[in-house]
Length: 214
Image 1 (spheres, rainbow, N blue to C red):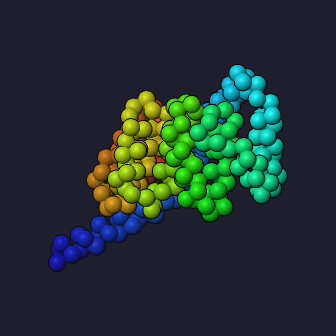
Image 2 (image 1 turned 45 degrees about the vertical axis):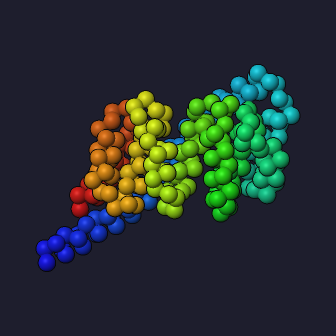
Image 3 (image 1 turned 90 degrees about the vertical axis):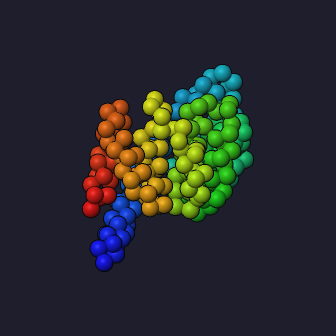
């Protein structure tokens, strides 16, 4: 009988932790997006500065302006004409924005396909490639193959990686999805103790540790 109560208690803890984890998922997206925009801005300006692709920059700017005005249809049409996940510069940046709008409109599979192609494009630079991996994994966190997603995240959890905190959080959520609470505790503990991690990420990790303790 004691074992039965223990099993029920573990189920309750797992459910509570999973709910808290999903609550924080949008915050993880925000962290990734913020870093992505910073890197993208630098990469885009370099592409323009080096190649003087005035027409491409105008098209990209027009698409972003359409997004800002809420004219998603025009933005998507422009971005899809400009987008090329296998290219650098504004074509690569357009692919990122195209993927974001696809995911927002419900075409998550289409967005993931673009992010995965971006992740394999070395001309984008390591920062944008890593961002593409993170966005792809993030949008498959509930449905993708856990082992495959973990393997993609593992290199990003190493010290010194730009997205280490977000990668640790996503890895912990994958562990919770599989019911591996000890693995999740270890990951959250690592993040909570990482003084180089953003304060918000450390705070979330501490709260998740508390949720896992019941």
